[in-house]
Length: 436
Image (cartoon, rainbow, N blue to C red; front, top):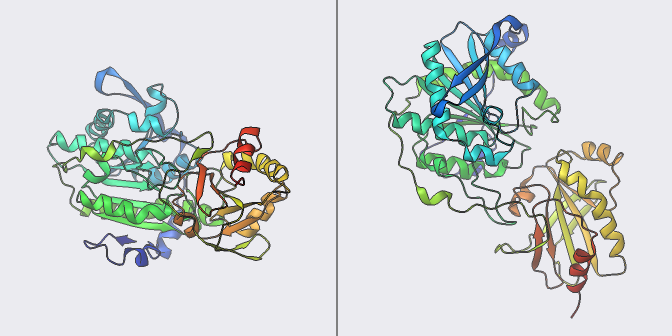
């Protein structure tokens, strides 16, 4: 585990080494500890501002710490329950608050951006008032936005004692919106105004992994003391389709790790005065493109030097003289898989033209992708970006993302979502690029 230094020099070199190792005794304790019994679980209705009621699933325990899950923009699943029960068995009470379901909001990141911070603050206060315990927040992905905004309002209320000890964030997504293709993301206002202790578990295989150094820098602007761990071989501990051995092992060890993390956060001072809010940071909001659009970023095509699925070395230093479509994707991404047939058909329609279609798989193993391709037909070359570093050079945030390079070697079009690539308007657009 690493703590963000005051000076970020050498951050990228140390980034790969941000690992927190659990002792052998802690691992054995996790394996031996029984899960909490069903009778320790119940449902609560907690009133927040405006008389709204928030549904909370409580995993009761007798210890002095209460872990409050904030979310969930995409719902709670079996893995949340597994970890919550294991924590309760170790004396940490857990509350799972489902703001989205309680407030009849649509599942997704936009709902968490729009969630009133007072609701989170009221729940924090209620959890402490009912239990008398110190509170630590847990949040995943875009749920981190609601969690940190709630903390800032809690600070503004000047609580009588610092019973909130910090937050644990799993691959946090603090973007104000999905950036236009090729552009760097903008972050929500509270990213720069957080000063509580924070622990970040970052999935190595997750799309936002290479934005972690920037996120750490932004959080530090507000004065946050940040600890982090890069989960090697993991996309998302709580993504039910990520069943890699590293992820399953990480889930097994996580409760024992969290016990130690909670103690660490409790020893790190939590300011009760909120950091200044920079209002200009949350003004640009973008969305996914669902049609081919002119490319607006300043990004120039990046040379490709990768191996394909069969181990063949592929190098592209010069894109001039043809239309090149480069598609960034992953097997865990449903829209990516959905558009593969249309890409196959596009390649067939462009036969006879100066055209090349290649794809870059994000941070998966050749063995996994080969197994995937036994079920899904892929008629174009698949290059393996095993670490995800090459995708990061193209500023890819959303998957799929596709760039269209013209015969002049410049990026002309792109899309950061799945589309039907063989539709006549798109084919005509690509063919017109080849006209003098």
